[in-house]
Length: 330
Image (cartoon, rainbow, N blue to C red; front, side, top):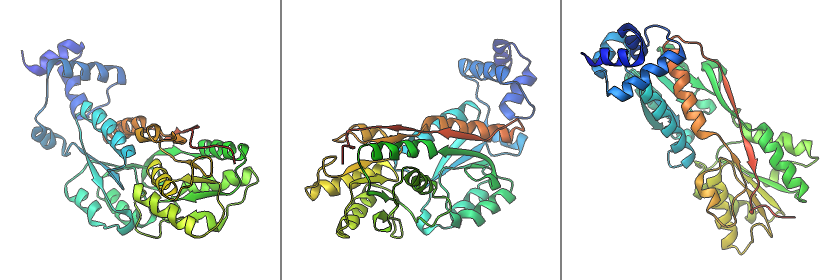
């Protein structure tokens, strides 16, 4: 008995159904597809990728575009996306781009490699022409931008609102915002949510307490260290800092520590992403939990469904604020 027949028998379906699940040539219900994939795993049946590409005119290749693969946030997204894609017969490459010196060749290379689908976990305005060209070439795109296709987006509004309320409730008024890229970017929704939350709590967003990424930042530890020092050198009063991500927050905490400024006794600090490091720093970092694994899994599911002409909906993932010892009373 051939491997495909064994898989079909184990799943209780026809060989044609097994073929449709593997090649995405016809809609198969989620329940049946799950049975087939389970049988494929159990029987160790793997279709030759080259043969599959010839049969379907597809590469079986998805790409994840990020700004900084060193950020643990993206590592978790990539791992989940790769795992789900593998179950569906696809491979995933993670592409690290420099959004501050964006080169369209990074996207054009994906077009040349005949990538089937693209998940933009990072996006700034200057990427638009290259992404539109990718769409025009037939690459299916999932991102936070509805103009490119289906939407998979992190919603920070409620969690940032809760964080600012928590800071306001503990007496903080002069709250700084440390970014990793320009506040002029239309895609900088964390900043927009921060401003909205500050206004809702009758707090002012003060220009002297804003540090953006006009310098070549990539929102990492060094970004936070430099940005915090830049803020302190202005000589302005600050009683709390909200950093665009946890790496920036941890870098800021180091800058404060080197200057003898205590967290949270002198300045409170909060980050975003809830990376593993956040719970290992002292004091434990207050942060915003982002469903990173769910995001990666959904990205693979959505792209595979789109490529196989299955129903696909937009997804907006909620985030939650996690109080930590890095926030005290002002």
